[in-house]
Length: 198
Length: 198
Ligand SMILES: [Zn+2]
Ligand SMILES: [Zn+2]
Image 1 (cartoon, rainbow over the protein chains, first blue to last red):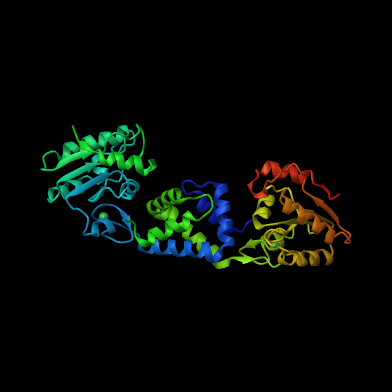
Image 2: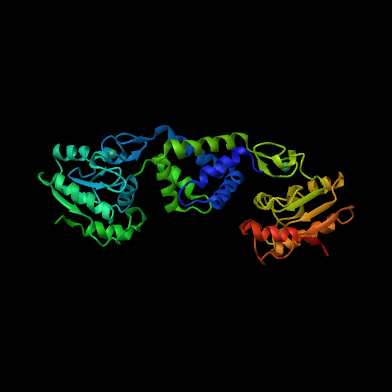
């Protein structure tokens, strides 16, 4: 019996990860009750992000500016480059505050099953960044999955002729674990104990 | 390192019931990734609801029209009136599709502890609706809490001189349970087995 507008809002929220129909209904009721305190700020925030949303043409991060805040931050150590599969992984690693360098988002991982080939990922632009010089270390921060590790090995081969140290996250990561689901302590430890690719 | 706009969106989402900082971050990433498929529909739905949001001046329901869809629906049985504490309870009961009548939202329950008195709730307007005539049955659908039951007894006394049958939900409800948290089957059963107020 809710109006079509309220139904549409409930459905839009229910499709977010972590929310279902039930929690979406509760969220909508909360928004309806707290129009000034919850609805208005959420609406303003969504509008602001939607208006300014951009994919960083350097690293592939999603932000409200291009270059993104990380690429634009001159205090970042440009000699270190951390390669990740997804934007979510970049954010997860950045939250540890332990990586002082910059990032490169591949946009996925190689997958024979899903037909994802090197040319489907941001690999050429990674190689170009490294070829451009000034980078001492490339951290391959792929997920600890078969496809993630396959991707890491592929990348290691693609960049082995450059004068850079290639490292990967320590495998304290649980097998099959996806970066974005791990707590920051585990991620921090894996980052600290990163080691050269064999 | 996320932009202020993305931070604000994450915080606005994190304050919704059922979401925390972690799930809000995942939701934001989902929105950023699926700009057309998730961000745009959510933004449009929020705008539409925010533009049209209204509290029904008849029953207190929150909807995008006044009178609300339930009060405006001529197929509803105007002889039956179900009184609830909150809009969330109205929605929960309406989802059972077992109550053919209309609703009245009190906006809370009597509470000595929180200083909520009869004049703080939509009780005068309830009495006025009943006095206006045409209502055969009033279902008191308060929560099965001490305060909910106190409120039900107070209401039963306030309306006992009207020629209406006053019923309440069967107490198959778990003690201390709040309507909005119950599954629809339990609610449906409690509604079917509703009995006259002793
Ligand atoms: Zn960037
Ligand atoms: Zn109404």
